[in-house]
View 1 (cartoon, rainbow, N blue to C red):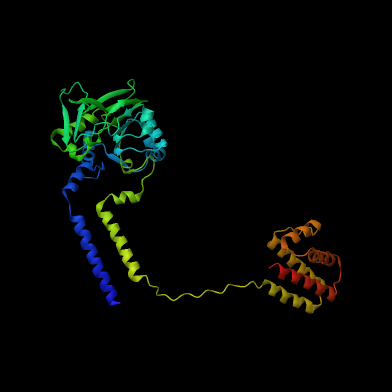
View 2: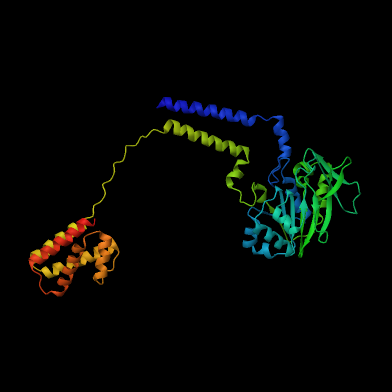
Length: 412
């Protein structure tokens, strides 16, 4: 026993050392990946997070508290009355790819139509949302994947050459089609589609009902890495300057950034596997379980003997009770008891109605029981005789008992 325990301890120590070495080793590729891997989470302080944006939001709106939403938009819209019926609220959604259900898109647009603003920053808007808003964006292969993210704003109060940029992160995409009657271009990005490069719209405002929908195809401009670069915090002020000065409520979406497939709910398992520490802890648990099965899988408990099945002693009870009636000489009463027990058996065993023991009953019982017609006919005739007779002699009672007993034995 001690030797087994020692082996387990040694194996666990070796596994822990290997995991620590692997987790502690960071290559140059890992550091580069930190720039390209964008979570857009309000808790993430890494380059691809939105911690800086979330901390600045209250100061941009006179210290208005920001409410974090972690459920689908349709569920929040359905259950939160103030959220659904309020006006001049701001809902901010930042994610790389936006996948939403049909009901989510419907409720989002109804939210905007009620007099609220929906601010969506995503590289790939949901196709259903694009169709409802009559907008189209270029594909990922459209030449907009520059290693430098640039953002310019269409504002006459700004100098024409005012551009905010940051090297090392992609610049997102741009719009190729939109409804000019309801759309206002707010910002552009530099697209390398020619030798000189041209500015194309990547930030628009769409009037919808009493509110508006903002679409920004360059969510990298909202990450920590972009905003913390010299004057780029002013870029955030320019983007949010088009929203309400004093919104009645500010909502930050933390749900859709974790979706990995079209129009489906993400699982808690996928969220857990995003964090390296939790991921290594889970793998360590799996390794420990495998070791436990390997060393402790031998059965130690004795095999539990099978318990004998209880037997049905109802027929024995009836026979014992019949002996008592027979000793008292009350044959008619005993015969009636036998008839009642037989009809009850027919009802529970063959699910037949025993109110009328007629020809139809006999035919059905013969078919279900599989007994000869003559045997069933004799029992039914005896029952009719017992019900009409005042006295039953011993010989007739004995023959009736034999017929019923034979019936029970053949239908078990």
